[in-house]
Length: 381
Image 1 (cartoon, one colour):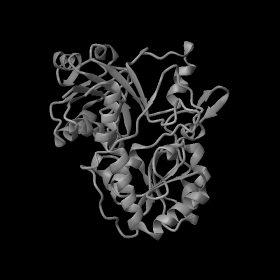
Image 2 (cartoon, one colour):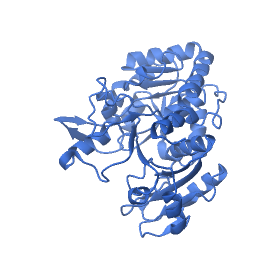
Image 3 (tube, one colour):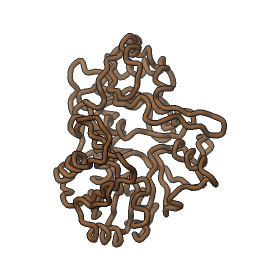
Image 4 (cartoon, rainbow, N blue to C red):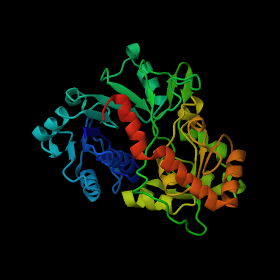
């Protein structure tokens, strides 16, 4: 058994999708028999989002309460430390958490953005897990000297399955990246029967952050890719819905036949996020332009959740089809014609595609299997 500390981004952004993302890793690590802790630290002013009031502030109390209750529910009570903008420690006290990190076999930066780098330098090893392939490396390359701060982890993992290969044009930021798939705790989150007349859905942010320029090119977000599929509802044999956040052209989307939900309402709680997925018949989603244009091989933890629930997925191609089985339960599509054909195929034999979706989750995205492979690379047993 190893002691493993995960640096996360949950308290500051306590929406269902973000909560689920990190929880899957905690569950997977524990299922492998490891001693797991979660730490988080505020590193800039007004970094805490309150999804009820929809404001950013330094008030950590709402998010801390949400995360504390969720961790306790899944058996991680007493395993959280949050450091607020004033440097005060909440949950585990400072001497305790510093001892935990110092005696850890591994520290995983899974959204802490280097905030614990100094403390984690005393752990057996520390690794970075990159969920923004292409974008992160461009940021690194665009800095003077192509360096990042902090300067070096013991290992670099990325959800960009094609990074470092001829298949992807994404830069590497002077690092060697090891591909890792998103994970889902398949035993905790299993298939449920789809509701009659359920829609094809997704949860998305129209523009998560500003475009980035690299090597003379400009790379955007989902705002660049979604218009390519605007007419999908008129071509689909199933109703299409999107739970969306950000400055999206809602009138234009509704005129094209999309049913719209507010993404913050849908993901206000962890349970609400999962209920929304379970109430869907399948997922259709575009991907960020930077993932698509660089053919990074990115694949979503949200889609992993859909698949675990037995929900087939129709996902814009980023190069992931070279790493996951497609054509049954999961479809990699490049245009609206292919998307409509995939939805029609799912509709023609839903039970078969639902079973295949679940099988993909169990065989390729099971948190125990994926994380065990990552730990083997790191040398942590």
